[in-house]
Each structure stands twice: as structure tokens, then as C-alpha cells.
Image (cartoon, rainbow, N blue to C red):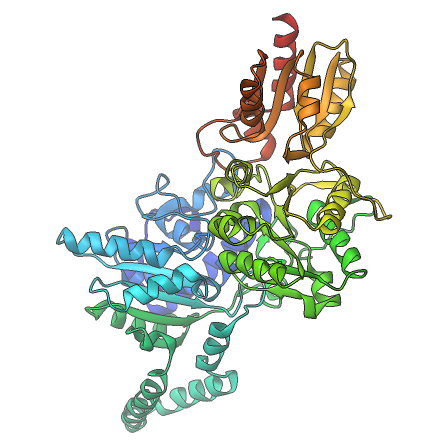
Length: 619
């Protein structure tokens, strides 16, 4: 059978374990070849093939419900539910999502994009099932990194006393995007069986099962071993929470998986099934990856592997920010760096290498990261917390309650701000301005190039008077070798182009400044261009200066709560009769796809801005 011809997983029921293993290899090859062409989440899906095949063999989907935590490791599930034929358009505009998506298939009962939601959601589904007197299984598949997050612990704590059965699959590959951190990670390491032991065990099983006498001896010794193991695991965190525990088992052994899942299926109460898998299984480069290079990939050559591109003239925003923070760390020993499991993504590898005592990876724990930063700041350290925009949502209360309320000096880097493209609505960083604007004491900055970013970082450190936010996209920018040592005046905007005779002013910030400047220059437009580099506080002098012109506020973040709304409120408060056109994202979630395509769909492309300028000229 061709993988593309799979319509559903019913056919698995009639297959032997050997055939299921062969199918798993075919699916793994399909994922390798497909994702290498389109990009997507690579190593996590290679590691979960046999487990997903076994789940579809044992359970009756979509009657039974399965929630993959985060959902990025659901490619095998998509294939077994008839979507392999859609993989050429994976994560493209109009194509299938890289995560579970309810509108795609009845097999997708849950959807996410952020970690640690699957157990809570599954408990809710199981509770509804029992209240409705229905009969089906609810399974949550959770990675070991996500299991260490606060929401997962909250859910497990509740599940231990909850009468509504959920099967929790702990997909343990000893990796997050990179290596795991924390006490639970150490506990799982102790539970895991050593490679030497597993090899000896497998050899012993093979030898003993060669004869009937040996098989009987094996069954007796197995019961003795299980009794000892159960006694030892009575001390594990799961059993202490009141949850039964099965494992750890080999996540690439179909027979063992099916046997254990059937056991879990027969339980009348919740159970943890601990499955050990190898992230990147079947592709050696991914198996040996310790820094997350093969976690989420762009298209690459399978034979050569991912070859890091060295840019002499350009760098990512993450690199630009991290490099200057490291420069300041070399001069000031009170600066500390925090990341919630995003060392590589936020380009912090060099900082962690050069300043290990002042660099802290707290794991998938955004709330803890924010309050940890508050504790450092209140103790006369200056923390730089690098966090993705979409993940910063999870630490909103901590930002408000623990940092801004106490007006603690720190710098928070909001990485991946704006539309991010293929990962879609759960990852677009378009909400941070809207939810941070109302918080007192925050200074919100949006640089348009490296020099401006460095001046802003310096300002946050040397002023040492407020919590500062610096937001930046995932784009590449021009690289400068010399570091800036000056500061800039807080709350000042800058004129890129200004002529008092111009009747139109475009106000924008961040990456857009360069593109809008090019538009004005190439079309010889008599338009002022204002760099609103401080979103909060705004430059009131500049606002008054452009009040007599028609104003276009161009942003690709949310309209509601954005800069345009803040400017409108300012003019209303001052009784200024102005003509202001705010361009931004309306009251909806933006789908996945190439950013330029998404901008066109949202009416926010550079051509749409030109059209708006023409309308203002003719209006």
C-alpha cells in the first residue's frame, strides 16, 4: 500500500506485528522525504512513528479521542487518518496545518500549539464523556519536556483524585527542543532503564523463549521483576499523585507497545504509560542532534543534512539582540540571561557557553521564568529574559503582578514578534502590544535596525528605572560589527522623511520602516514617514507635529489595542479633529502560510499601503 492511499487506520487491525513494523518504516521514510521538501517538525515526528501506529492499532479512532500535546508531533496521526496525500502542502497557505486541527479531520478532537494543555483538555473530555454516559477512551500524548511544565503538573495533580479515566502517554525522548532541564528530568533519568540492562534483558528474553521450559521460567522471573519494579516505582512522582504507572517501555517495539496499551485500555481508572522513544529515529543526524537543529526545519537535502548558513552581511534579529547583550555582559557582571527552553531559537548559545553562571534555561516554564526574573531584579541583578511573543502570553500575570507592579528594572526580549508564517495562529506574535499597552510602568520599544536595538538595550540597562520591552521579528537584518555605547531618550520618535508641506504622514515601527521608506522613495511620494520606535510612551510632540496631516498608521499586529488605537485615543483626549487610518489585523486569528501571502489576505501588503496612500491623496 502506498502511504498516500491510506484513508483511515482501520486496516491496521488485520496486520501482524511484523507488518506493522514494516509499515512504520515506510511511514518514517515518507515523513523524511516529505518534510525535507516542505519544511516542518522533523525529528519529533520520526521518534513517534511506532507509538502512533500502535495507538491506532489498539484504539478505535475517531470514536476514541487522542490529544497530542502541542500537536507538532501529530504527522503520523495525520497520515493514518487519510491526510498523507495533503503533505505536499503541509503548513502552506490553504494546506494542512502542522498541528492537530479540528476542521481538518474528525480524528482531530483537540488542537494546540503551545505545550502542556493536553492532559487538562483530556480530563475535560473524559468528564464530559462520563456525564453523557458515553463509552470511549481519552488519550493524551505528552512529551517529557511538556510533562515538566506547570499546567501538566496541575492536571496530573487533579487527575490523581479524579474518577474520570484518562490514559496519559509519556513520550519520553529525554529532549525538549534541546536537552531537558530540571528535577523531573532527573527523576525520569532514574526511572529509565540503562542501555546495558535493556540489551541484556532483550538477549535474556530471546534465549528463554526458545523452549517451553525456558518460557515458563521467564514468566516466573518476569512476575518477580515486576513486583520489585512496582515497589521501587511506588516512590515515583506519578504513584505519589495517585496514578497507576506502566513502563518504561520501548517506544519502537510494536509488540511491547500493543501489549502495554491494551493493558492500559483495560484499566477502569487513569494510568500513565511511560514510553521511551528516540527523537529523530531513523535519521542519524537528527538522532545525534543536541541543539534542536532538526526540531523544526526548513526544506533541506536529506543526503547532506542541514548545513548552517553563514551570513557575513546579515543576521537574525535574535542574533543581533543576543550579541549585544553578551557584549554588555562582558562589561557588567550584574546582567543575567533567562530563557524558557529556547536557547538555540533565541540565539543564546554563545552566552550560555561564555557565561554559564549567569545564564539560566528554566525549561518550558514561562510563568516561572518571568517571576524568576523579578526575583533577580529585586536582588540588584539585571535580567534579560528572552521569550517568544506567542509564549509570553502564558506569563502575562507574572509580567503584570511580579515585574511591572513593582517597577523592577529588567529587559524582556519579545522574540518572533509579528506574523511568523507557517506555524500559524498559535505562534503569530501579534497580540503582545495589545496586552502590554495597558500595563503601567512598561516601556515598549520596537527597533528597526541593529544600531537602534543596541541603543535601546543600553537605555534599558543604564537607565535602570523601569521594565523595558524590546520586540523584534524572526527576520534577517543587516549586520554591523561595531557595538553602540550610547542611549536614546525614552519616548522619542524619529522622522525618516519629513517635509512640512506634505499632507500625509505614515507612522510605523520595526521591520516595516525600511520597506515603507523604499515604497515612498521609489514612488516619489510626498509623504512623511515617522519611526514610532517607542510604542509606549508615545512621542506626544511628534503626535502634535503631524496632527495637521492625514495619518496612516501601518502595523501588522492587532488593530484592537495597537498603536493606531492608542494614537486615536490620544487625539480624542486632546480634542484634535484628525483624519487617521489604522491598518492592522482585525478581530480574528490569522491562519498559517507564507508571511507575504498572509499580508495580502489581511490587506496589509506594501501594495495595500500604497493604495491607502493614493486614496488619501485623492480624498
